[in-house]
Length: 311
Ligand code: PEP
Ligand code: MG
Image: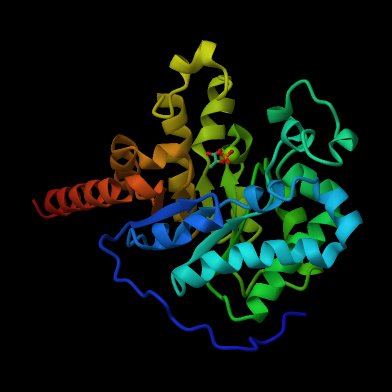
């Protein structure tokens, strides 16, 4: 069961949002937290946990075997805490581990990783987490501890889900880890066409938010490897098919009271911001150096929409 906070977390940086659509920031390494918070962003739309784990230079399984599960959990607690603290009380959306096997294979313990022909289509994200509950539970334990410490601004985001079945399974893992899904904000990334087409069923599972991972959503929708330079000119997050999926998800989520967000690279592009604000997205998360431009574009588009509505 979740424990009550043992200490009061002091509001560090309350900010008044500049725009109705929240503009947040992506953080990939905890060391960037201060710089990210200084942008005046309304929170962190994506805090990646890969660096916190991969920098141990060991696979999670190998690290736990050598140092114990508690040490593993602590690495995550400390990494997430430094960001949650910097932004408090602004929300920080933390993604559970999402590294492909080819990255794990380079680490100590990597020999035990499966050798995959298509790691991006393989054993990663929520697929791996659900398949290894004995590792996943120690990750989720980090969230339970952070809530116990008073970091109620921490939100939990699951990567690479395909359907409601994935979402219900992830929710059961949360409950098993002593985290109350009704009390905490949690949600999913929309990164596969399947997830975009399943969002209504996912909403029924009780998610608070759906966040577009447009790097993967573009790759899988267009069948364009995001890391293949031969087809790099075909990688287009603004492709009409990608935008149609995104627009439909925003509409469905609005009908079901689910917040929508974007945390892929495309969130840093003003053209994308314009489209998303017009579609009625709840928040946009951009890279540190793009926050300002996105804030201004969002403001501009919101003002235009307001004028249009009274005309
Ligand atoms: C995405 O797919 O857009 C995303 C944000 O996740 P990552 O780039 O880490 O795969
Ligand atoms: Mg992704």
